[in-house]
Image 1 (spheres, rainbow, N blue to C red):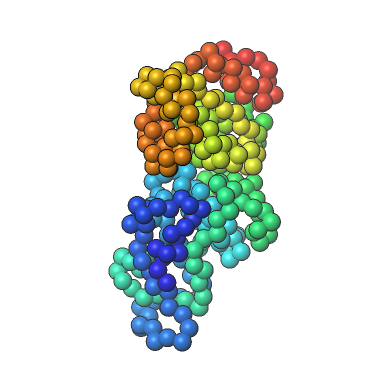
Image 2 (spheres, rainbow, N blue to C red):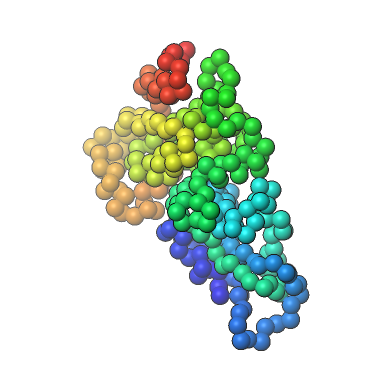
Length: 293
């Protein structure tokens, strides 16, 4: 079996470019004459690929870590609190070695964006259980936002993909523009608020990838949708250009076209007066109606 084919369709996310990073692996089973084993293991194998998804926090959580949690929990749930498995990862492509196992699971289960379907997983685990797993893995102490003691809400501005697990876990409000950095929301305590700055033309993606998953994992969600004048595209194309007036028509031209325009080609200048209203709402959601200073 060639893993290029196994992972060629993961909710429509994988393209030819990520596939180039996936090494082919042959899975031999049944009435065959296999090559001699270089290594013989007494536990089942789990075969998966991270090719194409590492280096991006959203995709690492969405296509690798959460699916690993879903797929592996019925084998060694007590052990995943350490590193998902008590056994070392193996990459036969490095030395061409042959490994023999009594059984194997090929590929990972995937439910939805940053999500677990409780009814589809043995034991009924949920995103709350996954967040508990992360708290154990990173030794995070805060479970709910009410445990955070600050004279003012502790706010974190996400501007990079750095993993600050302890810092994120100590925040009651997290603010960030649409992008992989918002995947840090899986580390927020329950009841915290995530504020997403939604660029022009990315309403659907913002909700599907971050807004809806945040609510399902017990994080309160607010969004600040920029107006046309706050987008750098407005200065380039003007109010009447389809890129400004009709983003849907650009999306209909294909994902690559829309990505080049609204993700790669867009910067934002936020109206701080309007944005302050969102921060006041965040404060109220935390149970303190006092305005931000």
